Amino acid sequence: MSRRIRRNHQPAFKAKVTLAALKGDFTTAELAKKFEVHPNQISQWKTQLLEKAPGVFDEKWRETVPPVDVKTLHAKIWQLTLENDFLEGALGKAGLLSAKP
Image (cartoon, rainbow, N blue to C red):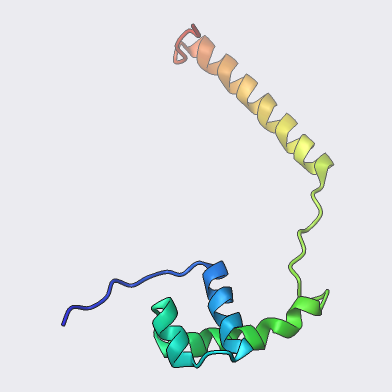
């Protein structure tokens, strides 16, 4: 008997199967056959969904992107520009920088 190749299911597929399992219209075995996944996998996805579902409604749980400090980024860009200009001049004087086309 040959082994199946390990498959990575997309989140949308997992959600579709799990929601079908939660509806209860079909047994786990029927869903497993229909979607070609192991019944234990459906049970695991169902458990994961039920554990994480309360977090959907919790504002603190959601990932927040830290605000970007534009002034700091501009200062860093300015510093790097100065360093590049200095190094370009120094290497040009030393004859280590090839002429630009």
